[in-house]
Length: 502
Image 1 (cartoon, rainbow, N blue to C red):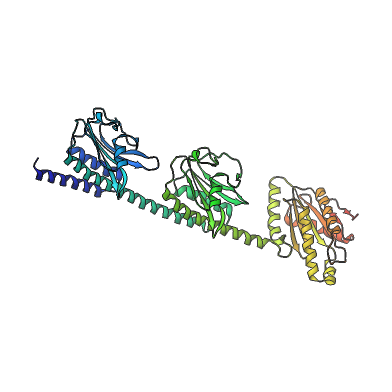
Image 2: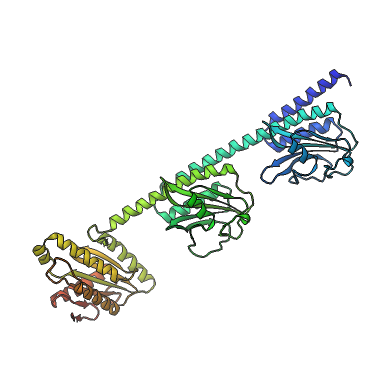
């Protein structure tokens, strides 16, 4: 062939390939165009582009034209075939007669010769262009040089598509980060916040399940989870220190990514279908609050590039969780009596309405105990307000310690206390009030020479009233009755009798 014509031909082919590369950022479309150009100008049996999967050290068929058993997605280990040799050695590998080359990996019957050219970008192998012909010795040096030029165009297509996909993914990740920030910053209830976090991550990231575990002592406890996977636990699961990827991430203060959890030492199987898991610690100004756990039912579901945006999301979530904690503390302060440390009347008024509504729905009963300290004004006048305050704190502590966790004791005002005892009859409440009276009476109050005692009034819902006002009025009348009868005693609105001090 005329050298000038050959040169012109090479320039035309390379130009066509360049135009194909510039025509689209869709990798499959560009690769098929390049392979079509090659096929139209050369009598090839097959032309294939394989991309390198570094993690698994496989070459994966991405585009193919011609007769071959290699379908898209087919994997060839880098240790096998001429394609593997081209990848490992980073240079074109040519077998003029494949039957005499032990590296040949048969995939197209009747192949006589094969040429494998690495696709490199900045000295890094991204894949291989593999060309096969039926005749032996079908590729002369000039043709190999030309295909090497075309492989460079294919390499550019791979790199352009990678950069475009990365930018598009980064854009989606930034949008996801902003969306999570918008959805979480205004939520001040912790349970609601954790549900919002789970749903937002499911919407914006490619995961099948999201769980939030919060620090509890040295370990972590599951507080919320959403998704499509099947839990291996019931209720609120807890992980001991060092158990599971979550504990490891929290202890180390950095993300843990496992793309095959079954090969991970110490993995805790939270969900049946999980194949991959990423755990991102929730840290706010050095304080370890918990962990975000993202699970996928697919192996190799997470890319290293996923880690940074998820850590940004975790930072936003940690700040939001800390905000809810501050709000809870402020709310608790609003409902706690500053002197005694027990709940105040504001909290009592809120809770009694809730308890009455619950009892009404389920035909339950509630006991109310009203108590105040006998002759408290005299005690204050004689010993001063500082000792009076100590007496209030001591009586509050006694009442709180002697009641059940489900019971509520509040400072109702001054030296008066109100107790709500759910699922308690008037008769049982009467015995509880008498126990409280005895404990207050026998307690030693340093610096107070006068006896410290209380009087109590007991009323029961629904026996003594159906509304808040009715039941409180009944308890007040019982308390007044106890005081009128001599103080240091308990009176019941139900039984209309007093229990005297023994």
